[in-house]
Image 1: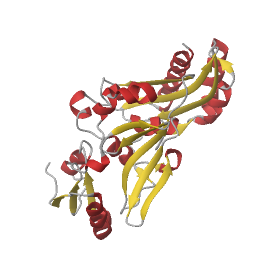
Image 2: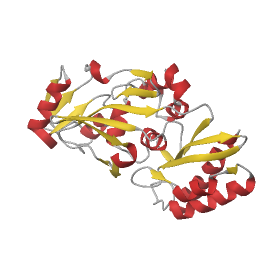
Image 3: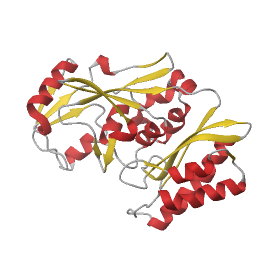
Image 4: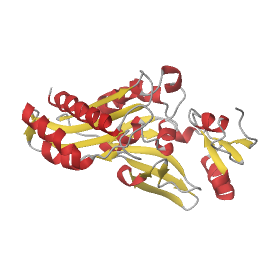
Length: 284
């Protein structure tokens, strides 16, 4: 297949991008890493009038840690996050998740912001951002607004982004050394989209888990927070009875649908298995 015809421009500033989006609206698409966009163009699932190349916008790049907050530019690549010492030190969940994203060639080009804005239900970054209570900086002609990750993902490939807005940066508050994280997923083959995945964060003091966050991917149209299971974890040790109670509680949190390869029952079984692994890792 070949992409449909479209106009192309390489933006030199964020202001230029916002002006183009304001004028073209839904008729424009942003090109960052292009790992998802190019495929949808070639399969004619996307047919923009204008492709806006934002790859040279330096104001959307970089990873920094300051004043208890890690700031990640939307154009930071998966590989940059995977290799970043700031990420490994302050946000180990992201460092744990990064190797699960596709393959090295894609991680070298694909972007953090692009994955979040696409909101694929089987993608790793959206679930991680929800588990970490991330804040998204969204720019438009009227100014910049802040959107919490838990409010950003609206459904299948649907987000709080408006047609004339750009995700510019993600801010994530760092947690103390008593917090631990675990990222686990299962896929048909290494590098494939996950059948089921789990981003988990919890405080662990003396083996007791508290303030847990369990955000699943691949079990719904957007990241799913397992609130009943989290309540079953609170104040407990990751002993066999706790893991049994938490995995049982998932029945009230998850209602996965089947996909091309796995039934709903299989997905629920895998979600329970991953939860047990994650709890053991959090308490290790």
